[in-house]
Length: 107
Image 1 (cartoon, helix red, strand yellow):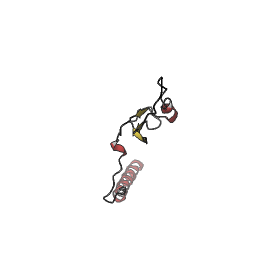
Image 2 (image 1 turned 135 degrees about the vertical axis):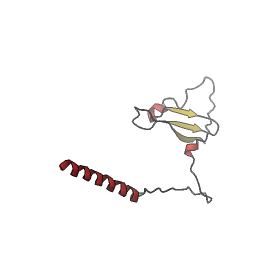
Image 3 (image 1 turned 90 degrees about the vertical axis):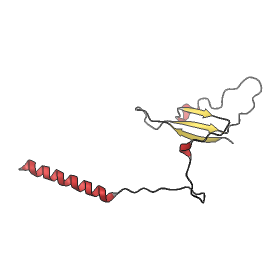
Image 4 (image 1 turned 180 degrees about the vertical axis):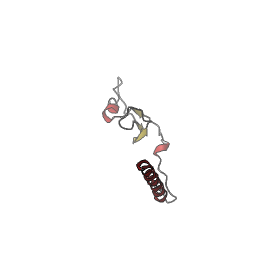
């Protein structure tokens, strides 16, 4: 059975949404008797907003789409928290600086 994957592309200056290509692999084309029929993928890229559709009969692995798993086979989730204490110190330093400038200006 065919698989669908998304290949994210670098954004350009005029892109209003992230560009992507649709990758279809493990595709088994149906046997067409006689003259070649048009591709079943004609016009799909324009309809879904993809830059291109890439179709392969073999398996294509996109490294960016891999999900890291732990030894038990479960997806690894990473939770990142900001260092708010350092941020608070930076904000307080900037406020003190602005207050000192304001006092100097008012004198």
